[in-house]
Length: 362
Image (cartoon, rainbow, N blue to C red; front, side):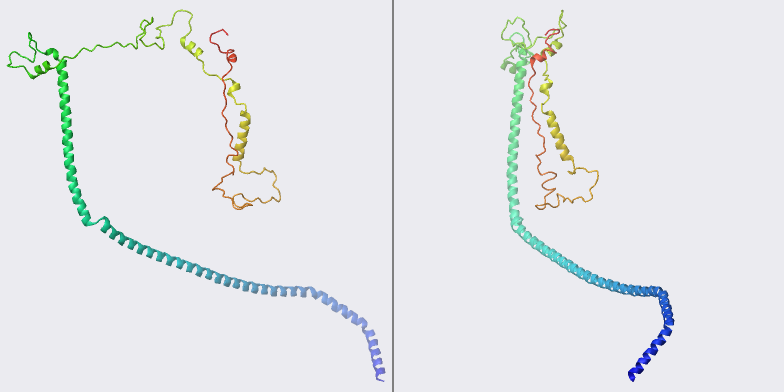
């Protein structure tokens, strides 16, 4: 009975729903359209709320990070500052101690040096004895110097007297013709005087000067016939006063033509390998003068390979660039040798074609 009533109620509800289905569908569509219309504003509002919330969280987190970073930096800088200050204090204390010890050492050295100098070097009593001995020595040296000066003065006086005596003897020999004879008295032997003068006795005691005959200068004499063979031979003839008469050429022109200078030909004056040596020298100068060893590319490549610098690092470690080597490791590698150019005398046959010893003759 209960099951039957329940079935009847369900059927009645189904019938009632079937009568209301149109109104339910219209209400559903209306609510759906209303939801579609309000969905975009609700979405924008939700996005704004989410962005504000997320921005608030990010700002708070960044503020927290900034405060944490500031605290870390403050702690680290305080640690470094205290460490540097400790080192500075240690250095200052060390310098103060070092200066104090240096001053104490200087004071000890000063006292010791003063004691040593006063006792062993600048001793008053030893210095007094030294000065007394030096005074005695000075008196001895002065007396010896006086004796030496007196001796030198005597020697000078003796030499002056000797020179004066020689001068008197020379004057007497030079004026020996003024001596008096038995017939004619001289100017120093006056008949009105009781005895002759001193010059007369000097004239009588010396001999007259001899006559010196001047020997002829035979070096400049010219003997064309060579009669005397003891004369020196003339190296060249005396110069002529004027040009000799006749068809003669100038002596200077004949001299220049006879004694010609050395004139090497082009074959012997130029080195055979001069061109090759010039090329080698030019290549060596270009290699030394250039800065970059890479070939110049007009277009720069996109991915250039990194080239390590020579003076910073290498496969075998640091190179002593600038101290041991400057630009190149082998200094004598690109030095061009300059050999001696061999010069031989020219062939006489070729020289006769342009220059001869006479004019118009070969």
